[in-house]
Each structure stands twice: as structure tokens, then as C-alpha cells.
Image (tube, rainbow over all chains, first blue to last red; front, side):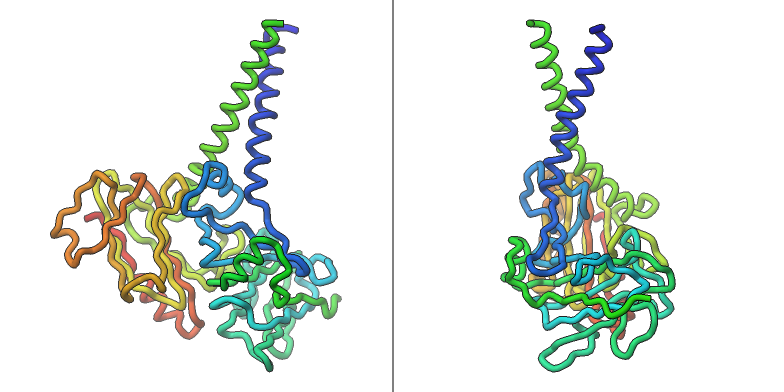
Length: 197
Length: 176
């Protein structure tokens, strides 16, 4: 083997070993947590007050300035209760009960995680403006065309969509059950498909 | 055999250097990107009040349309900064991050003593003249010269938008 070949082999091996191990270590730090028995996935929180080098480095895959869990827990989903991908062309209902947080919101996003353009400039509902039924229950339509009651418009362009559920200042049980992926949060909202064209 | 061992050792050393470079370098790149995005045309040591997220603005993924963000990219090389802001909105927070990604100070509306916050941000070896901090304004020591302050204001309702916007736009970040 010539010197150039050996050098090339050495560099390639170092790249695979060093780079690969670094990327794997960072991905392990940023793993999302699927909340048991729900379709929601908890997104990584901001880094702690005293981060180690791997935790600090893991922010390249997330929001480097995300708030800590005590301030905000964000969950996302891109599928309905049956596990089918959410589509802007379909009609869904988001139903739930009061959530264990000071304040919460549900927001819809189009492809690339951008807010969906619509004539109402309405992107979601929150605990301050959602219509309540008995026991604090709520039901929100997620649909491209008007419906009776609260509706998040999904626009005129057919595309895959996703939802973000934000719990501001979640209570301690919510913080720990979400972080540990336990089934302690049975009251996270359901997303059920009503119809598709 | 000896030459093979040397090559192997060299490859392992190179792999370790690469691994550490990625681990230590990536937060700097990530925070640098965030600072560049939030400084808008390189503005430093001044508060910038970013528009409320909407479908008409394209920014980072999953923007929160209920949160109003103001920011201040700081560089303390030439001296300390004074940070002043009203406590606005339904919930409010102030987070200081170094350019190495470490959060080094956090304050929210529950922790604030008053509905108006005044702080001085300085490096450990920087002297803050007594007349520059009347009323014994707290001095926050930054572990690094450069970083970012984020002001997050959660909007209570659409009806409060105008008032909350007015209040959060009073946030200031100025060299002393």
C-alpha cells in the first residue's frame, strides 16, 4: 500500500470513528420522548443551568435558546389517533380536558414547521381563548373549511401538517411524567379524523 | 508490525481530536447562528423587538405565535451594560446566555420583585461605578464577554396585544 493510500485510509477511518461517534453521542442527547399512550412526542428542553460538554453540544440539533422544562414543555405530533399522517385537506377534531399547566396552546404547522397561511390569520387556540364545555372540556376543529365552533384553518394548499402542544409552566407531575415517558398524562388532547375528501 | 501500530495510534489520535472538535465546536456554531439571526444587521448592545410570528414571516421552525421575543446580543469588551425592562404579558422571562451556549442568569415574572426590572451586566473584572447603579441595581456577572439576552413575553389575549407590545418594546439594553 502506498503512503498516500495509507494516509487516505487513516483519515477516512478517523473521520468515521471520530465524527460518527460525536454525531451518535449528540443524537442520543437530543432524543425526543414519546409520551406513552398518546400520539404526542415531547421535544427536547433547553439545556440545564450547568451543562456538560455533550449536553451543551446537543443544541446543534435543537433550539439553542429553548426555555427550561419548568417554563415550557412542548409536545408535537404529525399523526392522528389511528397513526395516519395529518393532512391539511382533512377534517380532524382535537379534544381534551384542562391541562396541568398555567397556560397551554395548540398550534398547527405546515411543511417545514411554518405557520399555515389562512385568511383569518388564525394559527391555533390556547387556554385563554378556547371555548369550554362542561368540566372544562374543549373541542377544536382542524380543517380547511369553516365549521361550527373553534377551528384552526389548515389553508388552501394540500400538505402534510403537524401540531404543537405547549404547556407553559407545567406542574411538577407533568414535567416529570413527560420527561420519563410514563403514562401519567392521560388527559393530553386526542386528535381524531372526521373526514377526508 | 511497529509501523502498523504507529499508523493505528495516529488514526485513533486523529479520531479523538475530531470527536472533541465537534463536541466543543458545535455549540459555538449553533449559538453564533442564533446570535447572528437575532442581532439583525449586526446590531449589538441594543434591544431588538422582533415581530410577532405569523405565516407571512419565515423564520425558525415551529414559531410560537403567542410569544413576543425581544433580544439583545451583547459584547462587554468595552464595558458593562444596563438592562431595563417592564415585566409584561401573562408570563414573562429574561434569559442570559453566553456565546458558549451556557445559560448564566434567568428571571421570570414570579421571581421579579417588581413590575420593572433593572440590571447591570458586567464581566467579573469590570468595575461598575456607584453612580452608574443607583438604587443598588443588581450586577449580573457574565462568564464570557459575548452572549445574548432573550426577553420572552407570553401574550394573554389578542385584546392585550397592543398594550403588551407597547410594554415589551420598552425593554432596553445600553452600554453604561
